[in-house]
Length: 74
Image 1 (cartoon, helix red, strand yellow):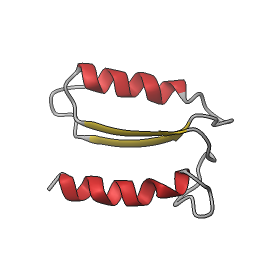
Image 2 (cartoon, one colour):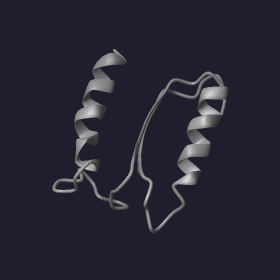
Image 3 (tube, helix red, strand yellow):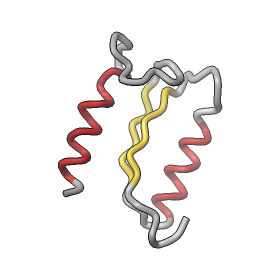
Image 4 (cartoon, one colour):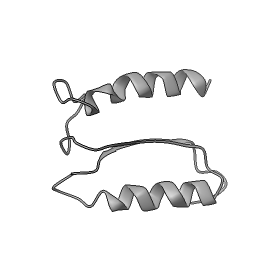
């Protein structure tokens, strides 16, 4: 991570069975400590690699959150 690290949008399901969601938590904390803008969305339930997460309650909201974040970064 450097001062040139771009802003980060991140979403993660905290019940991910393929990777440890704790990695995302650690990454978010490191970004915040470094002063890098970060927009984290840590969902209680989801599916690893869900794409747009259509039909996956809770996690399917991430594309809307991402769109709003992009608009705010302009």
